[in-house]
Amino acid sequence: MVNANWNYPTRIRFGAGRVQEVADACRTLGIERPLLVTDAGLATLPLTADVMAHLQRADLHAALFADVRPNPVEANLLAGVGAFRAGNHDGVVAMGGGSGLDTGKLIAFMAGQSRPVWDFEDIDDWWTRASEDGIAPIVAVPTTAGTGSEVGRAGVLTDPATQTKKIIFHPRLLPGIVICDPELTVNLPPFITAGTGMDALSHCLEAYCAPGYHPMAEGIAVEGIRLVFENLPRVMQAPRDIVARGHMMSAAAMGATAFQKGLGAMHALAHPIGALYDTHHGMTNAVLMPYVLAFNREVIAGKVERLAAWLGITGGFDGFVNAVLSLRSAVGIPHTLQHLGIDAGQAARIAAMAVTDPSAAGNPLPLTEASTLDLFHAAFNGS
Image 1 (tube, rainbow, N blue to C red):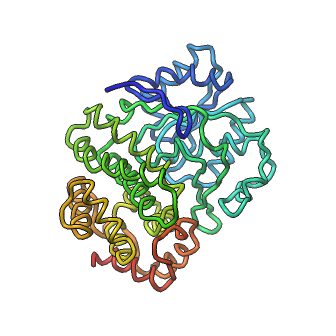
Image 2: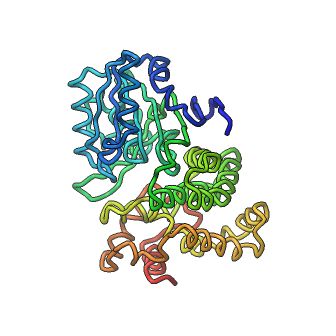
C-alpha cells in the first residue's frame, strides 16, 4: 500500500495510518478550534476518542458534536451550528460516512449565514446568495468507502416539513484537505461495506451513462467501476485487506468527482425512498441498479457494451447487467424494494417526488411520473 498526495479535485492525503495527520491538516487550513462532527454511532467508537486525543495533544481546542442521524435532518444541522457558535470554533473536522461528512460540511457552511439552509438548494445560482466570508474551513475524514462526500461540493439534508431530501450546494463546501485512510474502514459491518461500496458503483455508473460531454468525468467513472468490481468482493471476503480497502476508498472519491457530469434515476428514486423510509442510501441505489439499467437500455446499450468490453465482461449489455446481478448477490444486496420494507402503496408519491429530484435531470431517458412509476414497480416486484 503506497502513500500519495493528490490535488485533484482538492488536496487529498491518501494512505494507511494518515489519520494521524488530522491535526497538521487543521493547522494547514488555519484551524485552531476545530469542531469534530460525526454520527452518533461512530462517536462511541475508539476511533473518535483517538482523533479527539490527537487533536488535543496538538494543543488544538477541539470539541465533539455527534447529534447526527443516518439521514440527517435540519434539526441536526441547527444543533451543530449552535454548538459551533457556542464553542467559538473556527473550522470543522467532518468524519464518518455520508451523514457525518455532509452534516459537518453544512455546519461549516451555515455557521456564518443568516438565510435558512433551504435558500442554498442546488437550483440555478442559489449558491451565490451565501456570504463566503462566513464559510469555515473543512477537513474531511471518510470512514466508509461509498458516498465520496469528502470530495463533493454539496451536502444532502432531509427537509422534514416536506419529507424530501434536498441537495445544498456551494463550491466552498468542498473540503480544503481530505484524509483518506483505508485503515478506518476495516471494522465496518458487512452491511455497511456492501451498501457503501455499491453506492460508489452507482455514482460511477450513473455518471458514465449520463448524457452530456465531460470526458474527464467519464474516464474517472470508468476506472472507478473497475475498482469496485475487482475489490468490493475482496473486502467482503477479507475485511482487513488494506490494499483492496484503499482501492474502494479511491473508487468512492472517484464516483463523487465523476458525478458532476450527472446522476440519474437510481438517485432520483433513492432520495425519496430514503426520506420516507430512512433506508440506507447506498443499499437503496444497489437494489435499484439493474432495473434502472434496463429502463435506460435503448439509449445506453452502446456505451455499456464498450464499458463491458473494457472490463473484460462478455455478452455486451446483457453481460454487464448479469455482472451487476452477480456482484449484488455476492455482497448480499436484496433483489427488490420489498426486501427493504418499502410499501407499494406509496409508489405514486415516490414517483412524483423522484421526477422533481435534481438527479432526475441526468437520467439518459427523460423521467415522467408514469415511466418512473413503472420503474418503481419493476424494482418492487423484481421484474
